[in-house]
Length: 361
Length: 90
Ligand code: SF4
Image (tube, rainbow over all chains, first blue to last red; front, side, top):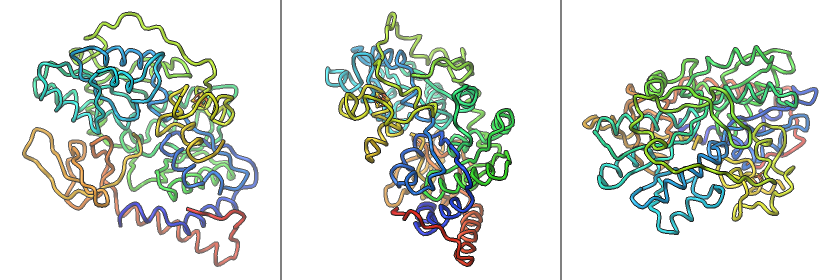
């Protein structure tokens, strides 16, 4: 068992798609939450192989896409400071702020470094005691355990020159926004497998019940994805509402308790603005007051942030499943990966980037 | 960022403040932190996110769900109800 090849078996995928086609009797709209899944779906052509009755819309699970513009502008202002080493996941580098991006800060002499793990940023802080090392801690529940461990580890090492800009968001509050909208079209969810690997899925039965909507916890390989779709379609056709675990090899009901405990120790829930969507109550995490010393937003005064968002960009509607990338008038015209108007066009988890890369224009 | 690739633990280092491991991703070996999966053993497959193992993959569950899917697909073949309106090119 290698856990990859087995889940790319074309014949088995085809067989499950056949089963979906044999089960479906009417139109259903499903949403995959996670942008990683969006890319897998479009790359493997799963959207095109499914019977016409099934439409997939793409969810908000793209951390880079939903990080609010003012937070990016704030990060850029900090990154441009002379004695700062700014560390970020690679995905963030080309995301347009109001005027700049991290790439152009770097081109203008800023010390911007792409890291693989937040522990790399802690090591950089240790090796550069005369510099301020700032890490842009973005993400959903999946990256939170790593990001909080960087703080705990810096604390353990007694580092005084390490801080993070926190822009963490959580999936369940976003589901309330999507499902509570009068324009909602989503009838079933593929839940993000790795968010659930960390958090478990005890938060979802209540949401499923409240909105009468089936869900399936779904992995990332083609076979995982079609399995999640089949689980949704079977429930919809039978009029059942359940949370099915279609990714049991990685996800348990309780999730990773050790990770949840660490998150709880360092972060507390807060209202958070999502780019293009707006503020969602208690949808984010921020540092607890005890960890204020690691809060880059408090350590660096960057003055007032005035944002300037492209009026053409409809990414907010795309991220809520109300529109698709090719509904955007700027898609492939004013907005391309080389000249992006929104984060959704440059993130490796952005729906616009997936549609552009795999020719769904 | 959320893709998280499965990798095989090939070495565990308990000697530092954080429990670390070497993880093999189909030939590419990287370091990963095991603090959140303290029960991990050499030979286990784990899902790694930004340098942290967040879950150990269960072989038993993996085999069971593959078997269940194969059964659905075989049954379809036997009954001759395969739908092949669109051809998969994966
Ligand atoms: S194509 Fe560009 S402008 Fe249009 S929604 Fe996507 S990111 Fe925004």
